[in-house]
Length: 404
Image 1 (cartoon, rainbow, N blue to C red):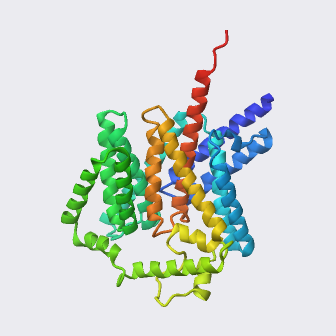
Image 2: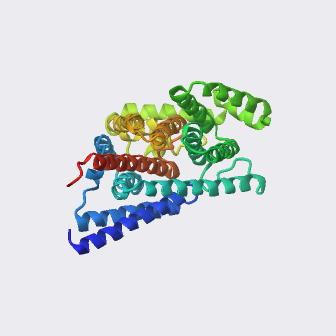
């Protein structure tokens, strides 16, 4: 590599890292900021490929994600070709840019200090969102807060952050001050989660906490039961009744809407088994060909991640999506078992439990489609892949025989 290429490479690497910092800051505060940060990561990463002939895929120490990502990409392309309009192209572009973002970001992260900064910046983003959340409720009298996004998206992100604070609060090798700060943050986010009045998020958090407890320490199940019991006794009836409505399948309009949309999604899949009805085609297909007798509140999507892929991308897309998600779960848990550092090994474990929460909420909401949540999903994958790459590189360097 020439001196010119070295200087250009260093500049582009710093540009990618700075763009990642922008992306992290916008995670809970601004879709525009994450859009700009993500596009810049891809732009500067692409320049490194052109100028330095760098292959970002080869920088991954773990190759297991490559094949399912490739197959999901092909399935999205096939569904786009079926109905290649502007909205389908926008949907395709969203997924492909996030895949590129993943590879370019991991390729340019080279030390754990950068990971720590990204985590801190994302926590700052959450802090800003929490302040605005409480401002909405207590000063603007908003009954169902949304912060800077939507109640559903904010609830999902709160859940994942709470899983991380619980994991590090209980099992992190940290001092008492940080432990108190983590549990205090958990309590604040818990209040914010209640204020979103997002039933799917509440149920998903319970399920994720049960999984966390089952895998790590079953005694926490007792604490979870006590917390749920106290909340049911002490919370205003508004929140208790809202939670109970999750199980009302006869009169609750939101639940009946979801059931109607789920039925239509299955019918679309039955009629278009191979490539689905086409990207971003669920709503028009529902309104024209698959309308159910019940008057739904919205038909923008089927309110279920898996059913969306089944309806819009068919068997090929559905299998590819499930394959990718299963691979990610296995990959995260393997990394948790293999990493020896007591604090860094908790990161893939918390991510594993966080994705359980993510997919539990994805049973009643397309959170793999919302901009805020899907971007956070791949940001979390970037951090995990970079941690594995850096730790494996460090371990390899330690095992190299010293010269002389």
